[in-house]
Length: 196
Image (tube, rainbow, N blue to C red; front, top):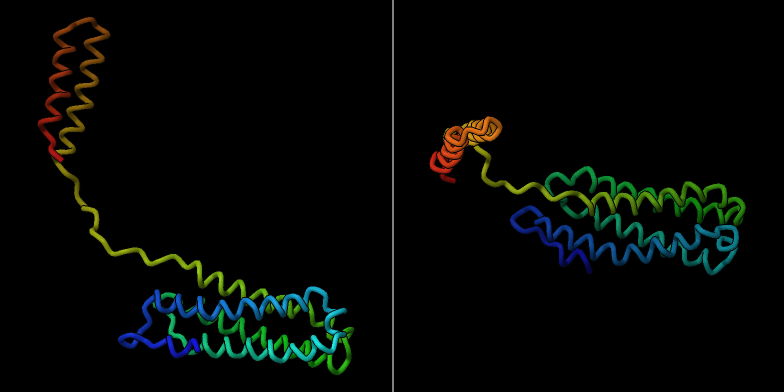
């Protein structure tokens, strides 16, 4: 169902196509994880229930299917490590579910309980891997680069403003209005020296 909509364009996946494929996959996988986590939350009671034990293989198979679908996706450049982590997490969750099921069938709920913490960790790892893959920052857009040199007009304007400020302050302190006026002329000259 998902694989039909996941056809590569020009040999590589577009980022949006990849994210869309993961979103479709996650919609089904979230229900599977919820069902498994519900059993893992109260394992002594649930793993003793025959109905639960009959449903676990189907949930385990859904983990297997999800792993196969993720394995068939081509991650966008830069997401290879997170993609591989999700694939590995799905395999570990599937295997841990199988081990718990086997222990429950052979030794009962108490035998399976010894594996529950590892099982919960494997299920959590799937959610964590998905979150890491989903929250990857978008690559920075390639845009114009900043100039490496400096603008001489801006430098001249800055010097004139600083000099004018000092002269105006000095004229105000001394009470000499001609010095003060000269400082204002320097500041006004900065407006002529630089045109953005």
